[in-house]
Image 1 (cartoon, one colour):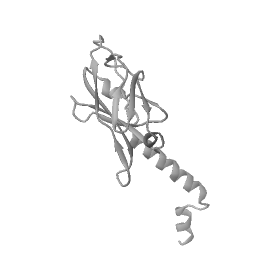
Image 2 (cartoon, rainbow, N blue to C red):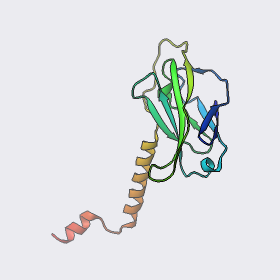
Image 3 (cartoon, rainbow, N blue to C red):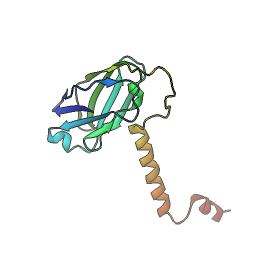
Image 4 (cartoon, one colour):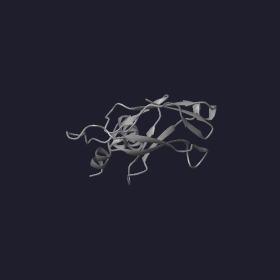
Length: 152
């Protein structure tokens, strides 16, 4: 488990655990949010970015104190950059510095690697919108198709 402490805009790693590449659904990141600004925030997101790979950045909503590190950022050895964000661009937005975590090579040389992507914040937002739409449709006693059939 990766452990971090967040004070104001300062993110500090507090563990000395070695991170090894190609782990799946194993590595978690835990964040101790010190300030009320962070603890009272509606949404806190964690960015996992591979500094050495193009287009390898995942943003995950922090629910509680910890989240699963996406397996996509753990492929191959290299540097993983981690930071937090809270709030929205329209209102108050808090960000932290980036903490780099070294990913060490594993001993695995062959075998199948899962290809299903880790869920990100955008997927979660789409699922929430779909659920709201489903709830709204359930409240309407007549469908648009039924209304148009009345006028034929």
